[in-house]
Image 1 (cartoon, rainbow, N blue to C red):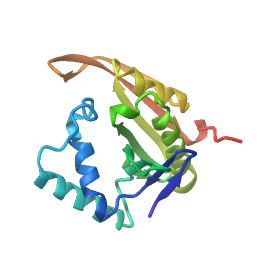
Image 2 (cartoon, one colour):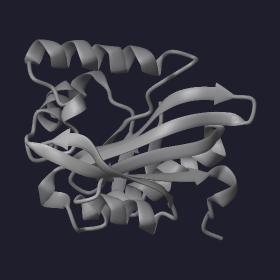
Image 3 (cartoon, rainbow, N blue to C red):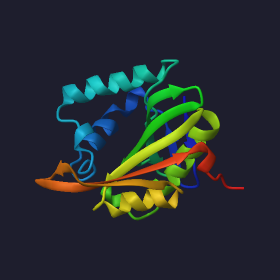
Length: 184
C-alpha cells in the first residue's frame, strides 16, 4: 500500500471504506469541470470503477497510481492525484499524470505540494522515466501546479478539444527523470 506524507497532506492508496468519498469527488461538477472524460454519472458506474481501482492495486503490473489526498490534521478529502502507466520500457515507465481537487482547496498550494511528493515517489521508488500531463490553457491554476514542479511545456494545441460548448486550446507538459530536481 502506498502512503506518502507531506507537511500538510496524506496521500494514500484507496481502501474499501473510501468508496463514498471517491464517488462524491468524481461526481462533483465543479471539481470535474476539466475532467469530464473520467467523471462518474451513476452509483453503479462508480462501484464498478472503484472495484477495478482496488483490484488493480493488487496487480504486480499495476496500471493506476491514483491516490486519495487528504488533510493530515482533519483527514478531510482534498482530492485525488496520481498517474496511469502508459508503457513500461527498458529505461522505465512512461506515465500520464492527473489531479483534481475540490474548489474549496484551490489556491492553497495543496496540489503543488502533493505533486512534488508524487514525482519524488515516481522517480525514486517506481522506476518512472517520463511523466506527461496537460490542461486546457484557460485552467491557469493547473498549469501553475505543473510549472511550480519543474515540468516543461512541450506543446500548445490550438482549438484542440471541444469543451463546454466550444473549441479550446490544450497545453502539454512533461518531466523526464533526468530533468527532475529533488530537494537537496
